[in-house]
Image (cartoon, rainbow, N blue to C red; front, top):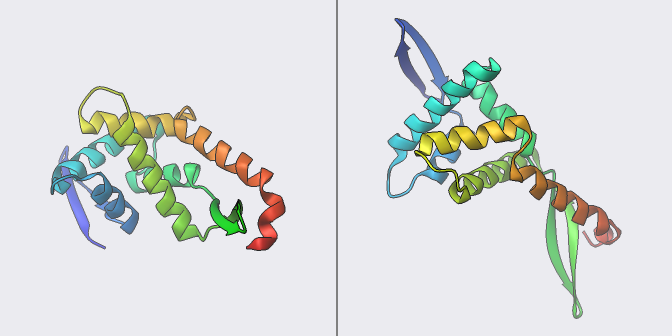
Length: 154
């Protein structure tokens, strides 16, 4: 783990670069603009910190925990029929799927503004429970509950 120092009002604050933050930054970065995405992410987390009073790393992990899917649907072809089999995910894969979902929603958002504002807007929507990712998760769970009879093929 590496430490990043941010100076504001003569105080030093440390933001830890966890593997999840690094994966999130690299997923959003295009054409080698990692430092710009990193600055935008930390500024948006700092702005959200004042709204919910949590440290940025804990806030990011809380957001990941809010939208992580616990089930994955795998396709299995038996004869001419394709079954969608619900399979449980390990915690690390759950968090990686949550990161990918957030990255895709930020890239596909129609919110106009800088990347910092887009990240902040999407993370705030997740915190307030109004994000489209909740609908994605609910349809996933609904499909998995309907296909629960095929779980023995796992």
